[in-house]
Image 1 (tube, each protein chain N blue to C red):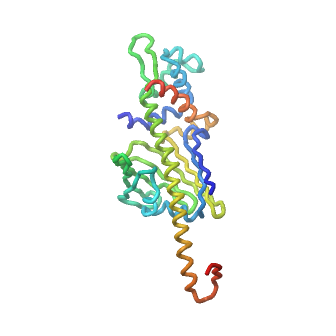
Image 2: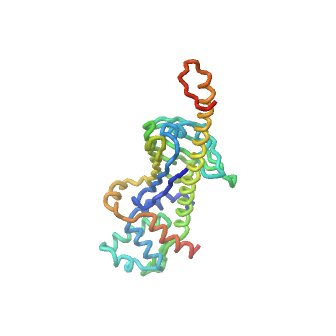
Image 3: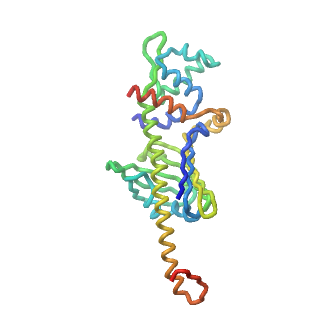
Length: 130
Length: 160
């Protein structure tokens, strides 16, 4: 279920204001008013960002009527982290395998070329090895 | 043989860019992407194998396959080719069907000729939100996902 929101998690993280909000929340639970302080934007604008973060599962908001404190939900971040780790592994290990495969293909090609050239009658091969 | 490889998350807040050099001519490297027989030999991290259901290598064509994980789990995959420029470039979209892994991204693969060697540039763009270009223009100088992740990873490690 959390996995389904990975796209929205990435979308939520793509905005620098939202990343700044998350960074602030990493220090601890905070009210919307306090969160808004460092930003030159209205409370409703900040609330909008919080809604995006909440929908993406990145933060949760308390139900305590007045100040509804915001806090980070580590699960969604953990999912993103896991996914990035897989992506990185794909990059490192697939391309290691691709590299090895290409070496094999090129070695095979060299081997095939050798004997074939010997069979040619046009005498154009210079075959240094005998 | 010196293989250079890097994966960069900071150049742009929306993408992950990897570069890697191969000791092989560009045409050969490109051809390794164009045939499921080749792809089966290298696609996926160590321990993974790939079974192809269908492969249609043309713009708009799809590659449907399953990756068998070393843990026995199967990962259904769908790739839709968007742009194919032999032997220079392949752009494909990952995901987008009900039964496949629910992460969508666009991958651009660029093959640069280095005279017998080839540099591969592997760029993933996330996600497919409408305001992507706007965001890149406006926040291009932003440090991006990597920093956030690095900062938050510490936090998560302490919490989970």
